[in-house]
Every structure is written in C-alpha cells, then in structure tokens.
Length: 220
Image 1 (cartoon, rainbow, N blue to C red):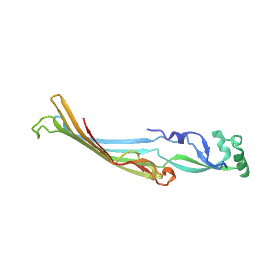
Image 2 (image 1 turned 180 degrees about the vertical axis):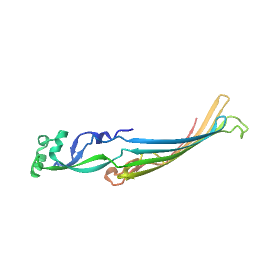
Image 3 (image 1 turned 120 degrees about the horizontal axis):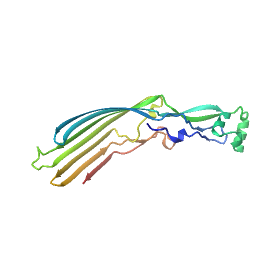
C-alpha cells in the first residue's frame, strides 16, 4: 500500500488566472495505491549448491488517479479557506462581474481515483551451477538470473497507468571461483531501458521520459 501524491491530497486551492475562474483543488478523499500479489515458484536442486528455479508472478495494482474538471459555486471554496475577502482586488472585480460571490462559479481541476488497474506479470528464471564435474579445476561455477515483465492497464486513464522504472527484461550473469580460501567473480548486468516519467513532460502531450539500456561489467 502506498498513499497517493501528497500534493493531490492537500486540501488547498490554487487559482491559475487573475479572474479566479479556474484553478486546481486538492482531494483528501483519494484512496491509496493497493497491490494484490500472486507468486508461484518451483526449485529443482541439481546437487550441492546447484539449482534451477522458475517463478511466475502477477501484481494487480489499483488506486491510480486521473484529473477531472468540476464546476463549483465560489462559495464552496470557503471550506478551503477561500472567500471574497481573501481575494486580490482584481479577483474580486472578476467575481463581481460574474454575479458576485453568491452566484459566481469556478472550474477546478482535481485528481480522482480512476476506474481501472494495472496488471504486472512476470517470469523469473534462475540457474546456479558448480562446474566441478566438467572442469579439471574445482571451485568454478556460474550464476544466471533473467526476468521478463509485461504491464497491461485497464479502465479509464489507462494510458497513464504504468509502473515507472520497471524494465521489461533484466539479466544477471556471473562466473565465479570459490576454493582454497580464494574467491573471484566476474559479473555482467543488463537492464532494458524503461519509462521513468509519465507523459505530458514540459507541456508536450504524451511526451514521456525513458532511460537507455543499462550494461555493467564487474570483477571482484
């Protein structure tokens, strides 16, 4: 469970123009993100430290939010500490031109919980295998882990439903030596590039941010 964006929860009002006719408003009633998880794993031990593993999993995440525009009477903003007396002179003039504080309306953008969810499904493969039966020198082995993930959104606002920073493919491969009190390891890590920020970046519709593929080679 993770709470919604604190900025969207905050019960405050921000006008976006000098006429006090449009703005944003918080929604303290937003529900948190909730995830229902299912995992199923199978391990097969090949002898000594060796084993092969397979794990499948699914995460069903809901609690995503979308923005909506709501028309409210100006007087309704009193619950948020906004009244005629707290406005600037220009804003008061604009309210008067729309019939006064008892008649004027405002259009507010606020977040609401979307009717939809995100399903993350994955497969993880693991293999640890000593090579003593193959090589003439004892102590060598390999360690391989690969993960494959898909994401699918359902419901309204589905284009914005995504787990950020989650690559659809990762791989970790190591060759190691562990014997006679000495340990050495050569490891290669790969992570497929993934989406790191939601759409509408810098005011450009559907302009999301993505990371590049990541590769790293280590020796220790």
